[in-house]
Image (cartoon, rainbow, N blue to C red; front, side, top):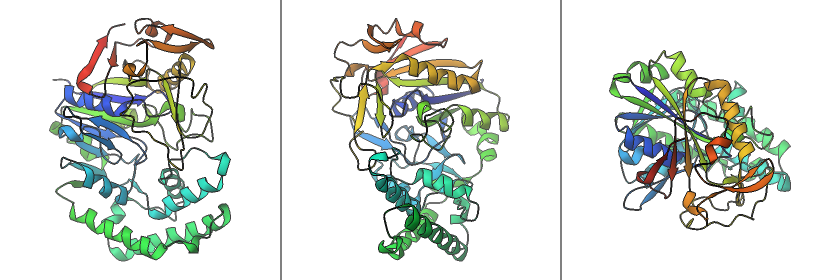
Length: 396
């Protein structure tokens, strides 16, 4: 049997339904491993079970409730504290392989991120406030690099590295923000961090398995398929999004395809592009007609106001933005089989797509939507509820 690699990517600014799509694919291909290939714990992918319980996945793959193992690749950042918080809330004990080369998010990354974003006041970048971008930038500085493998080594070396990170951020917070670094409870936060590391070590060999990329893909006989779960959306990509309101990662298929090519994996590759039936944006940045679209049956919305991203905004679907996102990804994925997943269609009052075509607001049916998109989709899936079991197929 030929193995499959299924890549789930958001066509918007995030929050498109990548979690429910990943859960759908895990249901369809149960002997798989979910690969997180960008971002970190700033993701929030919501999955509902048949009993209506739900979980928002940030530090685990969205197939976890189905017993699907996660591989946390080196393209992702890893936050020990957020990981443990989420682990305690899971209703099913997970298994996760964490790459030794993952960059570690510390409490100092979070502190700097929040202090900087708060100091920007009305000129915010749209950060989630959990330290992802700060971690990426610090990791590039070299002298303050901290990886998952470092957490598993001698504590003396880890303490030295954390002291370097503390000094690095003391300077940045005092110069770049409106806050005084020494006014924070840094010593007590250090203790919380080291307590978290101790708990992480105790989970090794039962829930957590330290690994490297080649071990996952060379030992692929353990899994029939790889389900690559993207974070954020193409419109926030560090290369294709509009700066400064971007995420500091590749949100296209680029990372996933690089892994498959680098490890010489032989498989059929399929890409599942995900969009809600309307556009959303959580965070700063240009967004057309926010507040004018009225939704129904969206009581289960997990995106809420927070002090850093502030309001969760919705607007009519913009066909030009969808096509721009598709064109961006096509630079990496030419010739690969592609599918479209349209979620939250039950949130629209008339159960049709209200969208902008050439800057004019139009009402079209789902059958008409594909002809306006610059992609030859093999199939189009529509989700009318929060449950992946209710996906239906609309053929182009």
